[in-house]
Amino acid sequence: MRDVYVAGIGMTRFAKQPDRSLKDLTAEAVNGALKDAGCQGPDVQAAYVGNAVAGSITGQEMVLGQVALRPLGIGAVPVLNVENACASAATAFHLAWHAVATGQYDVALALGVEKMTHPDKSRSFAAIGGSVDMDAVPADLPAGRSFLMDLYAQSARDYMAASDATVEDFARVVVKNQHNGSLNPLAQYGGQLTIEEVLNARMIVDPFTLPMCSPISDGAAAAVLVSPSRRPAGAAVTVLASTLQSAPPDGGVAVTQIAAHAAYEACGLGASDMDCIEVHDAAASAELTICEQIGLAAPGGGPGLLRSGATALGGRTPVNTSGGLLSRGHPIGATGLGQIAEIVHQLRHNAGARQVDGARRGMAQNSGAWFGQDNMVSAINIFGRS
Image 1 (cartoon, rainbow, N blue to C red):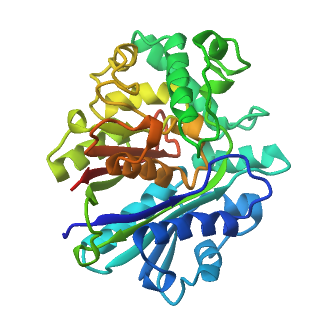
Image 2: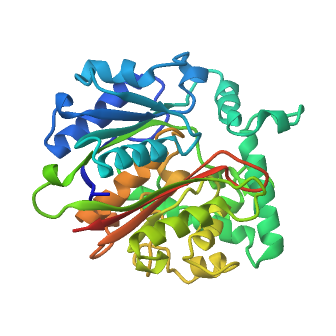
């Protein structure tokens, strides 16, 4: 396996954007990534396009990548359309990384694009609900929200019963990530909420109030990955490890724990070596449990880590400097590359007011779907500044 570099990144704002099309979102993200990499469309030798719900929301059931990339001059190359629920974009990135690392291509494009808004919000919720085993879905689904929030809420209640986590801790996650989002011009939300304001917001499903749940979003993010022969001049961001894992059939070990272990084995690093980390906080409790699963905190230690300030900007290991899914937004098929874009910005030292001083290593963790009591998919990508 040879070294792989992230030569370019591009990203739209993540937000409800009802007047923008999948092609429009794709063009902004891909053109930005190509310009950043000093490339043009014909330089791309293969493209990997992550998307989850275009068929349900827009009717574009098939060949989304080919349809969206043709206007940009990217054609006559392999285009692989990737669906892996909320981990679709990180899966596309993993496939592009593997193709370059194994010598198949020198320049590959990874794209995640999603349009979730629909005039009938129930269509959006139903589309998201497809990320579970449909044979196990109850007939009396709750109205007015994604069924996944019920699953996350049950997980949160179990977590509170097994640890010292409180609903106030979930509110602390929101306050931290909303502050970070206020420093990110591409974030959907950002502000200076208080714990009391989060706790007093509209209840969605116990114990989650509205700000504790990731929003419906539209957006796109892209990355250009290159081989050593196309390595960017100057400081470059290297992919140190890229892992993709599905949950074991017995569900005995958290899928993110398995993915993290494989990533650390691949690069000889651990969570404590990271200067910044993006995790899949689809619900506020998930940030705490994932911090434990990746080894940043001991089992049950997520709340204490949060309360200590270690995961805030200026702390030992800032988590979700972008604002996370809760604040940056969660266009599900694009989220993983949005996380990667944030880590690349941090390692390039151009993240503006949310910059982590001297950041040299970072990690992005992207989850997808639900199986039993855990996510069904987890992807971890670790990066270094060289």
